[in-house]
Image 1 (cartoon, rainbow, N blue to C red):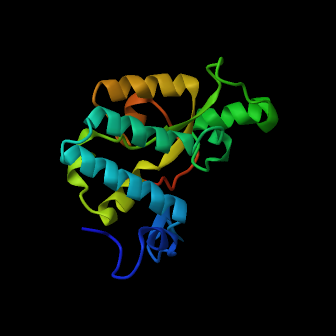
Image 2 (tube, one colour):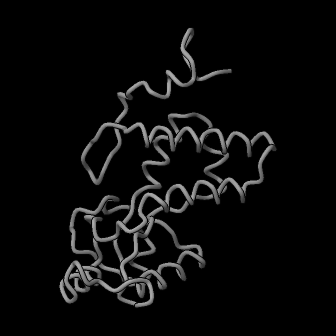
Length: 181
């Protein structure tokens, strides 16, 4: 069963501009070809897991790599920053923020975790587009905060709740996840 329309090759379908939208913060923006391709990869990889062709751990590794690489060296550009991350930028200046060897280094933290459940729950491209939009939600935190957040995640606290649990506060009042999550 092909996701292509009759008389349309897979390559033609991939190049077709999407009319779907992605929520960025609370603003709607068109779904980019890059975002659509990432969702297509997630859809195919998850289907391989469901069909027993791929181990879930490998699928998660592939998809997490895709999510992480999009934020490599981008932490300072992330609009939603922790109070501590903003303090670091103000103290050092944007050009002199410490790198990875410092507790003041900046990191892009994914708000939502990619889990094995996602591989089984999302069985259509549309569900993966929505899931990848949610999974791409990132905030800028310091390395010190990131260590506390990782501890929370290892303890099973994920999503927006982990920030309160780890004592991470934000500069913005309009967070991408609303008050009740």
